Length: 369
Length: 105
View 1 (cartoon, one colour):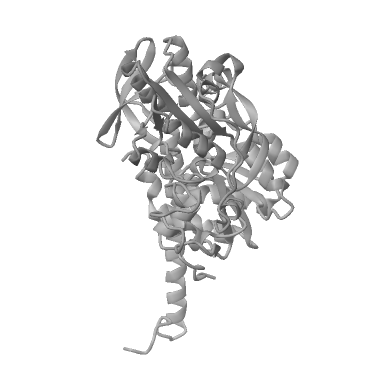
View 2 (cartoon, rainbow over the protein chains, first blue to last red):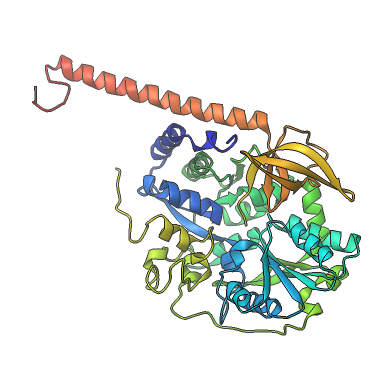
């Protein structure tokens, strides 16, 4: 398929890998922010190709993984209400809450439906005027324009029986949190290409400057990722710390302005708890007061919740890059994609699921120089 | 949900004022919201689609250029590598060795 197959060319990847090896005078530690990139890296074995010169730490950029348990529990409570049709992206259905997941709520008679786009949820609300349709608005800056549009349209078209349970997060505060951690080992970042497609990269410039780290906006195909690593390693070797754009075919410094501006009109920055990581100030998006009528948390009294994560799941350490998934005692034993303990084992973008599905069940054998 | 894919616009439509369109993803077609890219796209353009919304137009010229540069680089690497191997074998032959190989022949 065009714009996919070319960027999967093995010879080009091999050429870039040779260049990274030539450039590196020491081993560098980089973090890819986005779960989509994690999957490409693990599936294609890019980390093992470069294991002796670059260590890849997998970042917290998987929305399924970082949606806090409290929000999952609220989703479960809403989905169990008899008047509600609860709609969600498919990958949230098996994320374990405190007691069960959305799929189990559905099995018990709850009306839970998977939608591809939030506009599908809105259409469902119009088709079912006697029911309340709630959409689980999760994700990073990539899904925010879609979710913002659904709320905007609901107001525009006067659709009263539609509301959203919001649990949006944003990338730059998470990068700052990683760098502020006293145990941080990350020396350079591959920023998420599609987040920057929407937002541009201006927000990353102060981060690169303050923390003196290279940040390379990177795409998702193997060639993109290896080129992103090459640019990052070159900066580190030359002592530079700039924001650079590898994903030129989709990203500009300004981002997609109409999308960004609708997000700003519908949402505002709020403090947000990240599952496995904790609260990060001003790291989330919540509805602006003028859209409060569409907030499911006020329309239905779901209450405030404080819940604990299962003790044997080390998802937090995986999400912060402190351990690799196979270093968790539960990995592949008590926790598998069929019976996940933590969210990173559920999502198609989660690091634990990537390691499990691609057979990374133990420490990789180091090859190469 | 976070996986965006490139697809080609085949048709425009409009849902009560909202710009929509049919996007072809390697044979699979789906209706997508084109509101955020409406002023820059025409039928035949490639867009990156996330959860039913086009979030950018793919810059085809740039995509082609980047790929050509990278491919050329890898071909140059390949040529260099072949030359190195050839030089080494030649040097080995001149030293009267068997090209560094075993003594099977």
